Amino acid sequence: MITVSARPYAFSLDPAHVALVVIDMQRDFIEPGGFGAVLGNDVSRLTAIIPSVAALLSLFRGQKLPVLHTREAHRPDLSDCPPAKRLRGTPGLRIGDEGAMGRILIAGEPGNQIVPELAPLPGEMVIDKPGKGMFWATDLHETLSAKGITQLVFAGVTTEVCVQTSMREANDRGYECLLIEEATESYFPEFKASAIEMIVAQGGIVGWAARLQDLETAFARELVHG
Ligand code: C5J
Image 1 (cartoon, helix red, strand yellow):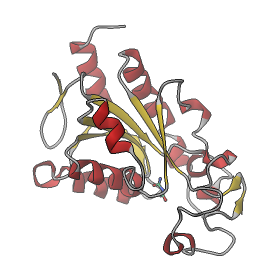
Image 2 (cartoon, rainbow, N blue to C red):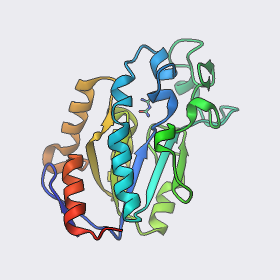
Image 3 (cartoon, rainbow, N blue to C red):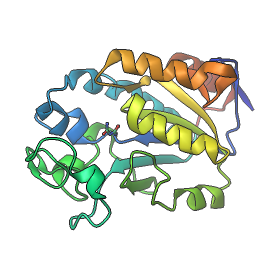
């Protein structure tokens, strides 16, 4: 076990049963000119975490620990997108509409890809999810269970939407969840701060939160260098 300084108290990370989860670091949410930017969001807040997420990926890849990437993605025929989700928002800027980087949130479109700096490596898990949470309408729980994974370290965007939803789903399925604060971001700084507080409140009701530096220190102290 590796002891990571965290809130609300130290996280005991088990290298034999942990995976890194990088949520939705997709061009349409992150890059200038994408869907997020067209909606009026300041994407520079999200772009700024790319180096921290890259550092986290290096940490896990360096120890040959499993890595999982998610994408919020719908089928081109939208058969996995309920009208209640699709019809929300402004016509022309809805899921499936033509955006600056192809059809918005549609699998295979340029904007739906993970930013090149964080591209999955061969052998890493990539899950296309039609919901905000990564377990809804996916076979992820079965996949992780088959690999014996019981702990998840989270990064990605946005903190209060897809990251927090996925953490809550994971927590309900019995996973121990640790969020890395510098490796997650929101278009709204107050939402990020509140989401983290919600996660660690009440004795860690959803999970733990740690600084990237504290995870790096724990890995350097307790794991062999590969
Ligand atoms: C994610 C969203 N990835 N904000 N999606 O958080 O709609």
